[in-house]
Length: 253
Ligand code: FPP
Image (cartoon, rainbow, N blue to C red):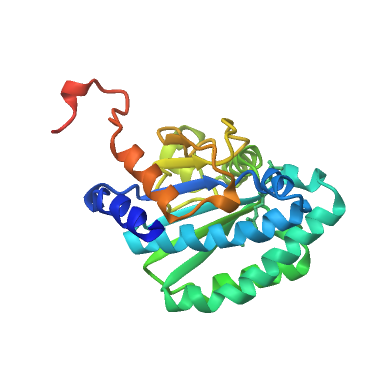
């Protein structure tokens, strides 16, 4: 039954008009756990299944880039036990799933201040990135110890250093040069941003890159998010008219 519903939704997707980059704010793990009378980390553990489902569904459809917000720079403020459990979960998941990424030809990348991650997490991540670097079907980007304001400041610092070293003319700085100084350099901007759990905030995620993204908010908690939920988000995205500042009549039909 569930399979049939998923197939029906999948068949409604126009594969010619897929978003080239989907970004997801995975939210609601803690509330999901509470609903089940379990500790918060139970929610994170169940969230891993959703990560697998969404990655598989996006790759099967042919979405070239999928970015998942796994840990923000603000998340360090959580209780130590939760941060520790999350970092451990990441290491375990990376170890377990690298084979799956290889089998499915998926390349792993990461954005954020990775050097500040615990060394085991950092190592597991770099190992996964290295092993999968030649894969071509889809790029899975994990945002870890990431915040958009941090990223924008880093980019500004990098460009300022280039100017100081006489390698860059300040008048030459344009959108392209600035975008290339960001950690997402070379990736298309997200065209669809999904946030789960009913929250309708951006929370310091990809602020520069989502300038024209379509935003999709769903009340579903992340551990309950399945392939069908991704299909629904894409169908909703495809029904919207993306004008980029123009009027309807100017858009190519
Ligand atoms: C948000 O829910 C979720 C997170 C901060 C962590 C997401 C991490 C995973 C799903 C684990 C593994 C990820 C990968 C990529 C292997 P919340 O804790 O903010 O929930 P709440 O708002 O209900 O408290």
